[in-house]
Image (tube, rainbow, N blue to C red):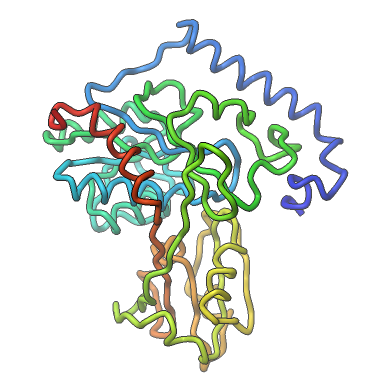
Length: 331
């Protein structure tokens, strides 16, 4: 329903235009207040790179954050990540993640980033507090990557990266709730890089694709090649911003599950919920983002599929060099 609404296929979005105008007026007012100094923003003592989006829903932002962290680590830097922690409710903020931090506290995306990269990660509604908490504990952090937060103007940033869903792009172009926009597309003129996930990148945009790696068993950690589950009876589910992307990834590998279930983004799962989706002879397939919430009660028939962002080398080097130029170690 929401996809039909935001894409403009359903005419009902017009009924929501007054609310969209109000949303746009409020968000523009907030941004203006920071630009004019009526609201105070905080400047971190180290460079801050924001990875965000203009639209609600999954755009592939988290794989970009992971890619950035890994690329900077390969270059000998010590990046750290801060996030709002959507979908989690921590006992206190800021919350610094460790190996035992559950997604129910930190949110699924921060836990996924921490487990994949090993980089320090902290969550807080106030990103500045998360950065300060990280820097008190980790003295050698060289750069902060913020997972989302393009519209969090209370935190000053040195580089802004926007991730676009190349297939859905901006839908009908309207602000929430009549459309998917948090800010209008004109905001792209002021960012440092635009990464387009799938579809066709427009002029000045960096094309990206998400490449699946291999199947990982949640219970045992066993890995299997992509083709191993092609002829097996399976069901699949996804609780991400745009579940059809996961199902399309499976189809591209020749895997056509007997059932596909789409859940809400940041969905909370129980063992009985997932077990009820499949019979004894069916394997359950899920995203890595879902897996971080299911690992503690996983069954042997549950598998997840990590993906990694791939960018053209020349574009990747230009983007990374922009970040390196901010760092004393780069000179």
